[in-house]
Length: 438
Ligand code: URA
Image 1: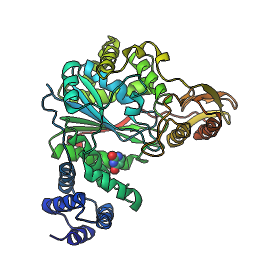
Image 2: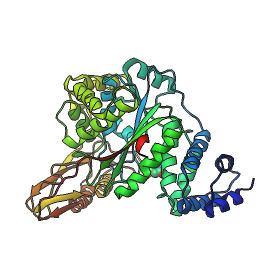
Image 3: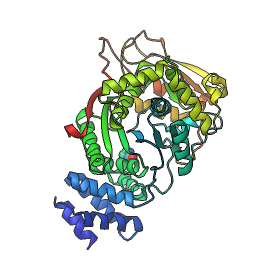
Image 4: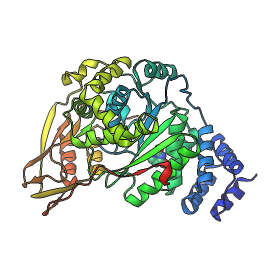
């Protein structure tokens, strides 16, 4: 088999066999196929796409490129959720214990933040003592004993994706739906979960800017999961502003805890309940999403989800007292008010801009090895749909460097857009993709 023949076949729109795909991904991972050939292949896939069979084979070949985690020692059907990435998205922090409180085992590999979106692992590390570097044995033990574990990704999970992503990033091929779908699903499946619920966000701050693209991505991912024997559901959610009011690390942990106490912002609660109700469905614990929803709401009302959060934090070496005493979390020295630049109804808040602004004050990373300032962040007091007068306080910025804070403040101020007319705030969920409606 010749790699350039495989590239030409895809370039000309022909279907690749499983053998050809395996040969190509294996050769590329081992370094026998050059980066420039992988670039050409990525571009061929970008233009020609892949059918469902090719997509499943491509994903399987990516999974085989490295380690896979075997979670079969966990009792029960395990669940995991993946979000395509949103600013202010602290869902995993509350969803992991909340799902465990309903009796469904939840084992999640999470990442660190890079660019304008934050990472769950960084946020959890704001909790004193919290250890995300769990071995597989520790994940299995914690999930069997308390029902949940959130750990950082191991280094050798899907090495083909790391190599290919680096190439896609500089060759204009990141935005290929089959390449995004196989990149995400290969990592989820390699991480060992039985079932997957995907949160596919659409909007200004999201990876997918239009509903059509988000639907195509969701369908591609559900098709991969189904073909590779994992029950998968994708929930399409709206994101024309950051999720909740807090963006940062410490500050997002506080918001997640407040939500578990029943005091959090409605959108944070709604996203967790929506995803959680479909987790009940994919794991077979509920027949319908509304039955799943009721289970989620019961676990919140009874306080079981909050108790489980404390157990999960303690099991990973963190101080569970944070749930009652936020002074234990890193705290910034300075606070600055941000005011509205004009009067009107807030029509949106550009998540990407807010994410970039908090990166300036150290809450996010520019480079992989940057050290974060876990105490800095922003609290958005006003959100889409609210009416404000020019000069009224819309947000508070927390940080430790006044000069950088001024730059971030200006950026957040201009991330807000206004309308003279009342605006309709879109519902959190706008579509659900299951294997039945592919
Ligand atoms: N996230 C991933 O993990 N992979 C992609 O290709 C895009 C987003």
